[in-house]
Amino acid sequence: MYKRLASGLYQTSQRRIAQAQRQSVFVPETVVTTLLSGFRVATENTGGSTATIGVFIDAGSRYENEKNNGTAHFLEHMAFKGTPRRTRMGLELEVENIGAHLNAYTSRESTTYYAKCFTEKLDQSVDILSDILLNSNLATKDVEAERGVIIREMEEVAQNFQEVVFDILHTAVYDGNPLSYTILGPIELIKTINRKDLQAYIDTHYRSGRMVLAAAGGVDHDEVVKMAEKYFGGLQHGHSFNELIPAVYKPCEVRGEVKELPMLYGAMVVEGVSWTHEDNLALMVANTLMGEYDRMRGFGVSAPTPLAMKLADDEGIGSFQSFNTCYKETGLIGTYFVTAPESVDNLIDSVLKQWVWLANHIDQATVDRAKRSLLTNLLLMLDGSTPVCEDIGRQLLCYGRRIPTPELTARIESITVEHLREVCQRVFLEGQISASVVGPTKGLFGRNVWPEREEIHARLDKLCGR
Image (tube, rainbow, N blue to C red):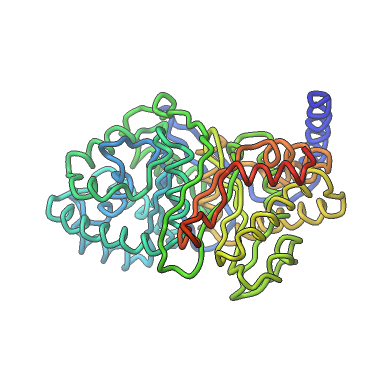
């Protein structure tokens, strides 16, 4: 039955995609060129006198090990400290004089360095990016100085309980796999990482097949290709295929007792799907239907979901935010929350009831509204050359191509009530629940405020009539 349904959905989706592509939809084309080395160049000419250009590298904390975890992020700090051609002060003055902005960030699966600049300064910006990426001095004095900066950053992150919740969640559900590593790394390694470690990471991971040069704004594709050949032509070959260690989701529960906190910060999740999984967009629709709420700012501009309206009536609920996090072979989907201990049961039961509603009772009109809302949000996120550039780079790393807007629209529109229900049934109702909670987790007589996984599953079974 499922195979027939999936086949029918696929055929319907393909027809709608073909129809959308035949229509006269005026959207800029993303042009992609792969150099002989495997280095990819992708651009989208959206016009204007400015542009954003960035290097996206298939290298993040999940490509580290127990001896060098934190190196990718450490390198991000070292990139702006000078090269043999540019001193630190010279680099800062050059960037300022051409009116550009440089930035960088590291995630679990990738590292990004990008520049926003005037179109006529694009070549110089690519020169700067390649220089700081491939030729950083990594001077010992700079390493020691940034070591202190990173340790202070770790102390700040430790005060951001949302970051803490997701770090301990990944550590537990992907235990034994590099995907469990934090981006910043443990403090004992931060204190020992040296120039040799940093250079080894560059030599190993900054390879042609793992990198994408993406640009958006007032750009000419052929010119950007020439820049790639000029500044990145000497890269060594290499891909990440053999280095990826597939992660296995391990259901768990983690409690971090911080009795001084007045509220519980936590996340309740099940295993989601990868970036390329056929059910990814359906889960994005489901995530939209779960919604979010913050007592400090109300419902915002979006219409409140049933879950948001119910939890808004409970004064003990500070906020909740649904999320759908994807990786190359797995994912996490669930709800992040801030709640008073006395509202835990209401929160859990409300989320579980919403899952059951999605799997069994969602109707066509509600799904159609959610699909429109999702598509609108996705397109609004692409307002400006910088988000477009980031979207190009991310999609090239995740999918190997940029999904055209008409195709994305058609794929979202092709999601039916039956398909959404089937996906939610399999993911939410048949999945294994995990949770990470930080705060006053011990109640009266030392009892756990957050229930055991078995109890949560029993509640879900009761709601499902199992």
